[in-house]
Image (tube, rainbow, N blue to C red):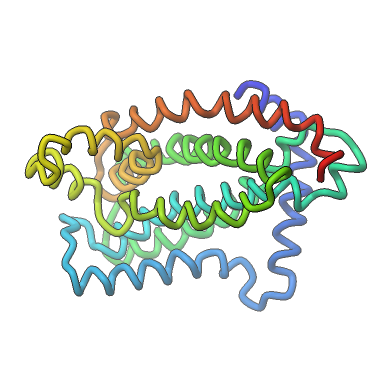
Length: 272
């Protein structure tokens, strides 16, 4: 991670230029421009709210639309950063063949592009909180750290996936499907408190309940989404017991993912 941080600083101008190019190309002829970036979370929020009205999902003291939108923000940021990061090397084949610079710049650029869109989503969330008369507490200072953690998780997927995608183009097609399925294993439609109640209190899975709950928390997004909702909407500090399992998994997988990327980097120009 220190190497990544160093490259992020040394090549900051290149990252900014590539990120700006991505934004311009994507929204150049779109009448709504960057507003398209918030259309997905808004539409999903409305759909989930409709589903909730049919099946009944307890959201506690927090209005369900706000709770769901707050869950969708880090999830979509992770999902799209990882998806674009995986395809970032192959989509910049011309640059890969012409000049050398650290190839991790491409997944980093994809993530920076999505950070701009995330900032717009924060404006929508602020509007929802004003509408429902919700005021964030001092614990909102944890938000930058939570977003940074989400970036690290996205890069963990992007590094390995981008290297694999150079050799096996099926990876970029399969990842969105895998991430869509992973969404249902994350507390987006339902809050994490509901999972905890079912498994730890009601023991819905019998003797496997505690193990399944621990396995559920090994998904880093479970802890991220819960922490994001707690610090912004519930006025509570992050629950470290929900963050630690996923953080351990990330700490183990990230170095392996990055080392694999750097090892495969030497043959990108020949294969791509």
